[in-house]
Image 1: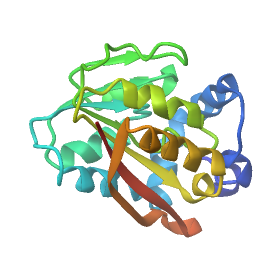
Image 2: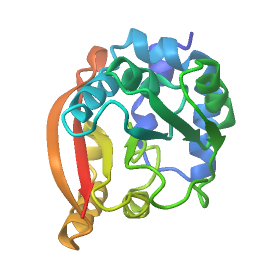
Image 3: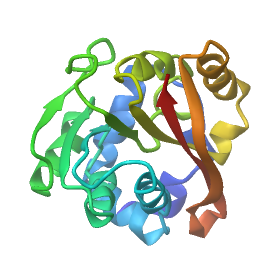
Image 4: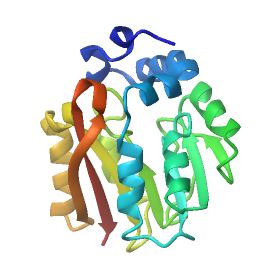
Length: 205
């Protein structure tokens, strides 16, 4: 297992090129589950629980940027059972596939999400569009992949909330009438470093 100071350093939540982000998570894949579980990773459960207020259990859900499948496992525990997953990091995706909770998984790329617009009425992007991971300009295209009245559930951790570009991206999709925030709540993200996150659910208009 990686040492805490090696994993949860401030440099983790800084902007970087996509290929560097993929490399960070490729190197972390083997220890990721144990590391974040030990640290009290709370956002996946919070997001999955919030989503039950707006989506029925038989909803088809895409766990976008599924990583090792921690988010998918939280969705399963919340009662959802039709879950697919995709990720840009092959090493993380292999861990997700091994969980046997996804109906289907596939590798996406920064330029190809790998699914058709309107395919999923619910997309979960847990910790994906955030500082040090995907850039804020991914938000609008991801919302655009939803059908009318489709839901996008995402999270902004505290470092992301401190970066105006992510708030501006969220405000832009709302101001243009593309989507509406129907749920937003701040709560614990990583217990051992006292970090919080906003869980946000958008509805495509």
